[in-house]
Image (cartoon, rainbow, N blue to C red; front, top):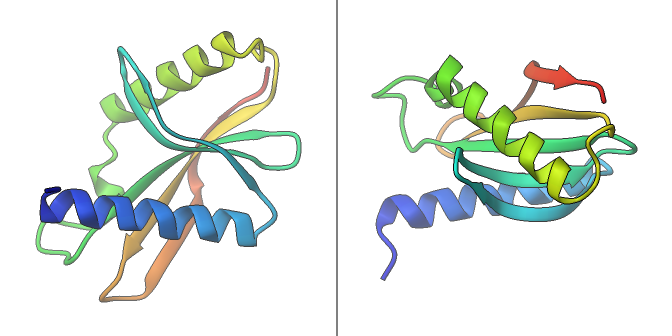
Length: 121
């Protein structure tokens, strides 16, 4: 049986996928793993692949969800994204990594592209 944290995280990823789809993106992969880590969602954002990092929190006792994405985590996400692109022959395709922060008891979902990091092929 999945832990409470796993259930919350999976639920958050489903909410994030629905949000991205409602904004014109098409989710093409979930839970992409590499030796560097995992990317929660991959979506086609109209010519740009969007690698989504989903952070779900039940409270702010340990800070905001987006604060948990450290520079080290960003580097691992970028490396995982690059491997995904290589595996699919898309090395020159434009891409970015976006953060989707979900706090169910508060404002709901925050899609923070301003904290996203981008790379063009």
